[in-house]
Image (cartoon, rainbow, N blue to C red; front, side):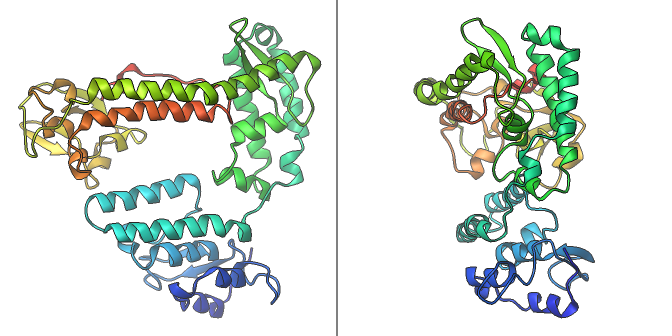
Amino acid sequence: MRTITEAEKNELLKIKIEDLDFNKIIELLGNSKKGPPRFTPEDRFKLKANEYFNDKDIETTVGRFIYNKYLIEKDLKMVVGYVNEPITKKSQHSINNKIGRALLNDEIDVDTMVRFLDRLEFISKRLSEVICGSFTPKTVVPLKKVIDHRDKLLEENKEKLEKGDVITAVKIEKELVKMAQEELKGDPGIDLYDSGARGSFANNYKNNSIMKGPVFNPTTGQWDIVTTSFMEGLDKKDMESMGNSVITGAYPKAIGTAIAGYFSKQIIAALQAVTLDKIGSECNSKSFLKITISDSNKKLFMYRNIISGTKLIQLNESNLDSYVGKEVKMRSPMFNGSKKLCRVCAGDLYTKLDIDHIGLTAARVASTMLNLKLKKFHDSSAKIATVDVGDMFI
């Protein structure tokens, strides 16, 4: 990583979007016949306010600049602004949401969205062969400090683990995963995990270099705890557990798809008659749900209606954040007072999506169930969570 010169910065600013093809990117960031790359994605430079489409002085990187040049500059700078953060799965998801809401609110057209998606596919897939790092020895070989701490924790909790205490096992795994992440901070091999592009640190790295962990035994109905990693090799006593782990992943993919498909048909049959009333309809229900809006759930309530005194307020991009941390009185289809669902109880999202037969969207439950079953083929690790029953009714 270095700080590029002012002349190099000006050269980047003069690049035209239509010239930024694969060959140009190879010239800038990859090894070519002309020699080594001129820049790395981490090379830094400063942009003064309004020197590009940044509204304040910033320090950015060559990688982020090319991302903005290729994806944002032409059509989306008023929607997204200059993106000056590492592009990970999480940050890209946030950017996609902004662009999706812009399309929903007619701020951009479908052609703009299509161009963005085409370019995103190119820069995220084709470009990976130029700049993406891979594993390093440190991210493959188990870390001695982590393994020593693992053995200490296993010994301290030996009695519980021998009884198949899955909660204790998961807590130990979480502590070790966090420790390993700290130990690997700054190592190039961790980028693949941190980006969210491929592989899960809490699953793939854990299994390979920390411990396999809890595996459900369908014969006993209990959990077996495998305390070694794949890189260390498995004990003979763990072979049955590993067989169960394979079945746990393969069975949902082979059989669970049919179960999810049938469940989808049941939902559609039960709810296909549930439709929205005409645009502007209002059942005048006086009932509501008390909902506490948080950063984690706020996106679920976009375009829903809340009661404030004698008025109705629609939650949208302009006001939703101001309600975070507050309890609101939300109109809900659970209290709809007319034969069809009125638009106030349902909110405006489905109107914007041009969906009238709202009951059919419940098939998403089956799709979610199917995706979870398919993911078990790749991730059979045990997870614990606290469930708030109130979150089920929105």
